[in-house]
Image (cartoon, rainbow over all chains, first blue to last red; front, side, top):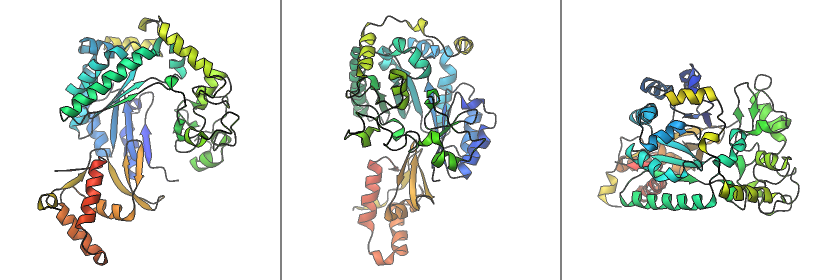
Length: 321
Length: 92
């Protein structure tokens, strides 16, 4: 079918005891393989085993719900040592060090500290991504979404840091991903539905994006059908393929080939109908929901401690480190 | 091009993989969440980039392989310079 990339993400892919075997098979099939991990449960020996199995790339991510990130930038290294050690082990095994930080309103003011930390680690790529509001983050949006003023400050800080890095001859690359809630046009989500991407969830459900499961659409399962028929023939993957499904304002829009009407999940979460244009678009009749979220972000008082954790048990465990 | 460049040894940057992709019927360069489909001449040059041999060695191999193409130093160097700009390769 021509797929060239295979990503192991989660949840936490390290809970698979046979991960090295899966990587070896991916390599055997000619895939470029990428592991996205929290680093918890990783060891230098595992990194080496993955390398030997043919893994091409590792990304260590720091989630919005990681209390340890706050500890680390605040100076307490202890809870954070495992992650830092693994970031180093990845680099020692010959990989570029790729770190991903989920940024939200309670850590966006620590941007410089976070980048300093990455610089000390000699990171190669640093992605500072403001979280996207689906699932858990949608429920906690008021507690996560940065205000416009915070965003402007952070952008200026990242730009200035980038200039310093360039002046010092550093090769570290900073990528700052801002929330689409502050855009006037939607993102080209997944480069179009059923266009490039397919993900298989733990139970075998095949999805056109990580969060598509929240949509009232039936999706196929790899235990019941082959990938070829899932990709080309299943109703789920054909549901929003192309542009014949589009209502106005997308249907007659000259930008529909560029953004594909934006994100179906966001349209569903914010308007109750996934057929609608992504309300991020200023042409959407539901754009007021986005404007309301921006206003709310200017006045939010939700503290970090008010966030609902995905899994209370786990976050306590992490906290004990 | 000058002598100094001929002695440089190109190699793929960490995280990049070069391979033949049957579905594309072309050589491709793979990197995190992306892929570049290479044209025939780019594929031929990168096929010789192994982190061991110098630009001069690579040019000599290619000139032997494609005698009808004439001298290739300028074309190969232009491509490699471009590839370095794009961060696909580095020189040591």
